[in-house]
Image 1: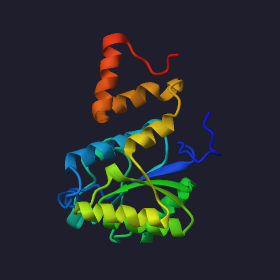
Image 2: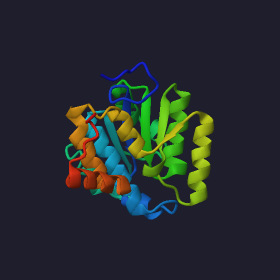
Image 3: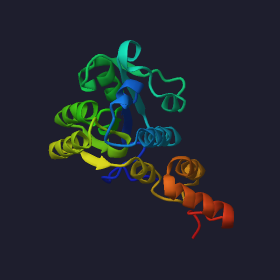
Length: 214
């Protein structure tokens, strides 16, 4: 069982929010490899699905300017329609704010494009409103490396906690003896975990390695 009284993230004390992972926003990304950002964001989305954590998907001007949510992310939640907005700060959108409140969670795990706008603005606003915000730095990106870095610093100074998508996945799993999610977590790692995933695949196929064994 998870200890929700600890400061660690669990599927039952947090919600995952993906903001504006859309073509037009991705075009402007210069702080990270675009395909890597997509890979990491899909991994984060699959983390929410496997652990049944609440997830909020949102876009900005999807039909008129920015395009749809990236299809690889939408495929993880094919029946969930993203909340479309006009505001750069999603925290100022009534439908988005209602969705956040509906989760009942005070720990928010947020990734967004761009870091300096669509991640920074709602993060600062949410912290001011009493939420604990975890910013997923490798599933977010900015228009320049400096823009990304300075925005991360700004959010940390405001009280945000920086994390990576794999740290969220493993913090949710926490114990390899949790067999109900073990296989699905390993599948996410193999598909999206880079060198770690290659190592897992090798261990599983070559000598039946299993992290839950003692």
